[in-house]
Image (cartoon, rainbow, N blue to C red; front, side, top):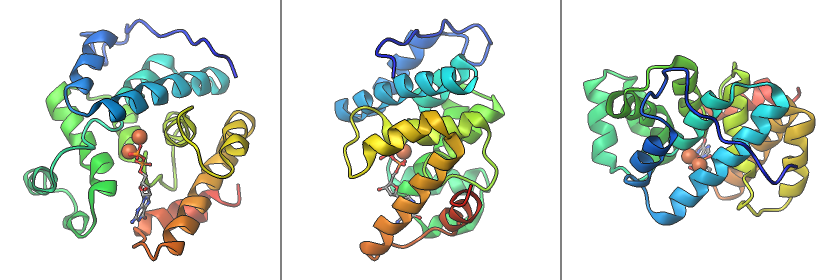
Length: 201
Ligand code: DGI
Ligand code: FE
Ligand code: FE
């Protein structure tokens, strides 16, 4: 895929302070390794957005904020679940679920981002969902195949994301499930919902 990607100048009033300001805000929330991952996700998301005709500015903002809350404490997430009266069942799970689903609330409240498709892409970036916009699919896949990722089959699924986006969503969900089962991990029911919807597409 293209090595150079052009970064959008924000013009849609989703994050009026602009891309450089958003990068500074995100950098302040995460460690250096996580920050570099986030920048690689943005690059991959912009490549995929161009391929699949997704809005580049929305892809950039969703990518830069997808792991905004990754390093917040469990206490922070549990407090927001109470404050915002989110589904109490969320409390039975962990950071892997909260940093997306509850993280979107923090992005909304702390960064003032109210664009629903962007917030849904953040919410869905780990678990997916039965219905995902193209933007959500692009973020879900960019997170998984950004150029720093290395796991068996990564080159195959990286290419598949540019050939058949929906099939690549199914590939990721199936392999994540296999990995979790092999490690006796707890499976969030939403992960199964995503598998059932996308694995045969
Ligand atoms: O935040 P990142 O590390 O960049 O990536 P991510 O948000 O896609 O998180 C991936 C992790 O989430 C990976 O270690 C697998 C885990 N995960 C996804 N679905 C489930 C899950 N973990 C459990 N226990 N159960 C799930 O259903
Ligand atoms: Fe994540
Ligand atoms: Fe990520």
